[in-house]
Image (cartoon, rainbow over all chains, first blue to last red; front, top):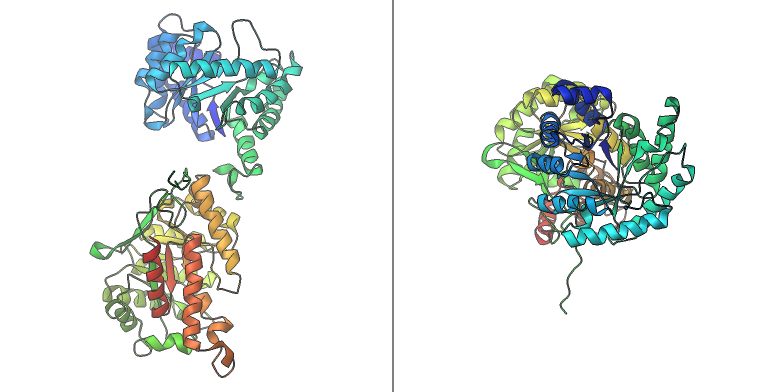
Length: 260
Length: 313
């Protein structure tokens, strides 16, 4: 399973300060540490980035790819910043992933960019009308995003459907609905659609010591239903991801499997 | 409508390994499909068969396979030359069986001298094998590796009990290495991981999942080899992507069917023919399971296998 390292997010104070000061040190250190821990892709979350987003995203892409041979997940609502990042992304390490489009017409431009730059793209299964009520509604929205992707010329194998993980502390019933949605998304196409989650959102707002427990057990259930990728902390999630891959027979067991 | 054969696509690829130097080097591996599925992808190299010779006369071999070498096998150098000049071997495997404590117990220095002598007499890739005595091999193979420095030979076999010393010697002398585990796919993977964690390049490694002869557990070897190859190709498991070796002659020529004389079992027919067939059939099965490098003994069995390979590629 693909782990997309979540640690380079503007929400974290240390990262935000480094971004503002254009200080490469902390950004590169976090990027390398996530790569070494098992991330197959690095998320670069620059927030809404309304002022100077283009330049900031380009600085992030260059700074990270200088030290880590991985593709990036470009994470912002700013269309211009995504395009700026795609222009300079080094595809030698793999194609980038846009985070994200949805069923909101304002976000369709992301599909246009995905087609134009041959990028992969996350389709968040929400529309303009707010949060989906259950797995069925998520699947219905997913089908609409798939139709839209086809319209814009984005191949379905480049679309990663995201059911939107909610906080277990406030929306406990959605935990199971999201697992069910992962199963349903795959049935929308043959070969099965790819899926992705923002994993740590499940434990957002929970006491700190509970977070890794919730994240890891939730990840194993999602993987059992066929999850393709998770935006997560690789230090925390890699042992679970590798172990579930072994249990599900996707990786051959050896005593040192966690070190690979 | 014309029939279109269904094609599998695989995510992984077997590393290709080159042995020997100059104009007489040989390359095996490199495919990204199951054995001989050339209609599905790349099969850049054919399997290579190495003639097995040893450092001491082959008194332990059945008479039927001693016979082709009877005039040369008292000396490894003339034996090696015979394989090169008369039998037109593409590769040679020198087994230092005489170093085994229960045999002649030859010293590492003697073994190193044999390696040097053979290397200077031949112009083809060489595989250097210990006596499979884990403790003795650790010293013998270190000396042998130094004698073969920079000659791009394969040395082996590194096992769980002695791999550290042998891996270090292979690295220091720029050689390729055989990693052997005993018929267990998970241990094969584990040993490959441990060896690469020492800094040994996985592209210089050859996996020996351990052989067996027809009628003596061949199906276990077949199954382990097949699963290793499937892990390499379908799961893109890099620890399982080194090519595989089948050390066939050693297992075949010690079973009852290749040893028993014609007076003991007249109903089994010609002893010589029986042995050759036993080795050829065992080797053919393992070829289909995925071995890229074979070590065999009888020239007629090797010729038969060369034909099989020619027809399959």
